[in-house]
Image (cartoon, rainbow, N blue to C red; front, side):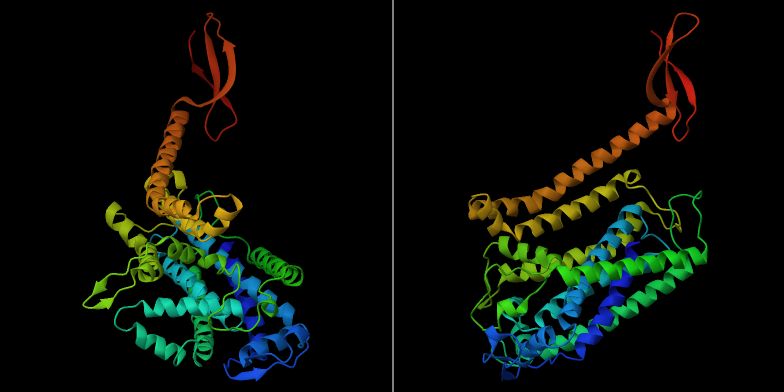
Length: 431
């Protein structure tokens, strides 16, 4: 159901985003706030920030829709990520569904980009920190970085173009995601749904499926409405308008971008000079090289596995993770790598709450992100192989029940149960 959850969250995003577009002004022109929120009255700010405040306090239902939109974005990214994990560990990326895998990988990248561009649009103090990070990443690109920064920001930071540019990028990303979801739906209609066994039905009654899908959509809308009403998220009025050179205390990115923040925090401060020009590897490697390699390998994995295994057959049945030890171990290694970078994004909080040395903790994460995936791979592979060996033993000797009975000749045997069956069969264990 993760695919449908992502699709329904996207529907909510489109509906709420359309509402927000009617009141939002993507302009960095300066104005003086004269709205309802008294603590910021008579304060100079951009029109983008002022329109977001107006949307939050003066438009009926505006704050609720803003928060629903934000929560829907978070759930959409989570659903896409869970869908990718499900496809990977069950082998649902194999032929003829390779294009479906590429669609979900692209959706994950686009959803992260949409989240970043969307959180920057209010032009508050918190989103300004993201703008500074974006500028640093762009400037770290060799040769063309300064030109890209000039084009994005329109001059000295923060310039006067970045909010309109990111607003256009946000809308374009939404259109691309819509096209990918429509394409994914057509591919599912063509190839059908995967299943674990031939004993499972290929499909279910259309009326039952429509009813279950409708129930899931209603549940998704209800949960998002409750979150938007009861759980505050991104209170921009508490952060204030963006002022270059300042930063909000405790500012952190969205959870889905935590791995990038963690990579930046633990990367050594390497800045070699190449042909007389400094090369900022401390930003370039964790912000562009590592994510680029990670997502490239993720997209190419079906082709890589097909090349090494020689499996070019069509597959409609799913695999159990334990039956493919190497694939499952690779997946757990990737999760470990991502999780350690994610945890590294909170190195300062961990050091503060547990009274640890920040430098020692940073050194630990530098070692862990390299050694941790290898350790996770080895442990997971051994677990899968152990489960396979246990199942072979059960098929040959039956499942132990702990019951012993005496034979007429005075010997004893244990009562065992065949795998997948309830009846008992004898397996002689002579005493």
